[in-house]
Length: 338
Image (cartoon, rainbow, N blue to C red; front, side):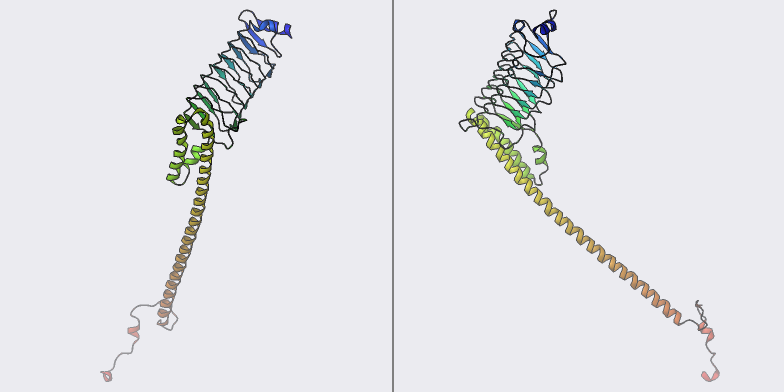
């Protein structure tokens, strides 16, 4: 394995091609750039641990796992390109104090315990695919200012962002039991996050609110969502996670209540609509009935008139009456009649 790694090292630009296993000890102090070979699907335990001069590493899309302590104590590492990684194991980048640029995969699901512990130059996180943030995952990332996650995030573990002194904004979804309790039965995810003042909600909650039936419901929901950002700046850091947890539960309960009320209103509206349609149909049927009666009456009157006219016709059976014929058929008056 050592000979294989030596052959892969290019002395011209000091690019090291990683083909698996652990980097040999005699190369660890010399590697500055690393690229993962296409044949590799995971970076092994402690593969690059204590490569103190390593500046950057590039993985291909087929690398799915970065295993335990893979880059532990790579104090010069600044950039890591992880386009296909779905799992980052315990302490994988622990104490990479100069790491500031991580290209996370759009399929990343799990960041394990202490994975980015003491990555002091890491300033921004945006991982929409992430499902699980484990114990102390971003512990003491002192310059981390913003963290944004997606609607699928299920849990933030104990002490996940402790001592992130610069963290001022976090974007998370609404989930029950989102934060886990520590051994002292306390929520400590944001202990010593002195600047944390803004929580934003991701996901469909805002769309749901916009579809609520009544404006005052929408106003109340938006006020409840905004309230956390009024409260957080005035809390001690040891209270922030607990308050966020309680706030999430309040928002969820309230939106569930209004969704139920909205559903009831829709049902009532459907019943009223059905009644209105039914009444309109009855009215239409009644009008059609009267119309038919009027039509039949008109026909009957017409028939009666025709019968009367027929009765005054000459008994010859002619169907046509000629006006002024009857006067000529009258007998002439004699002198005796005068």
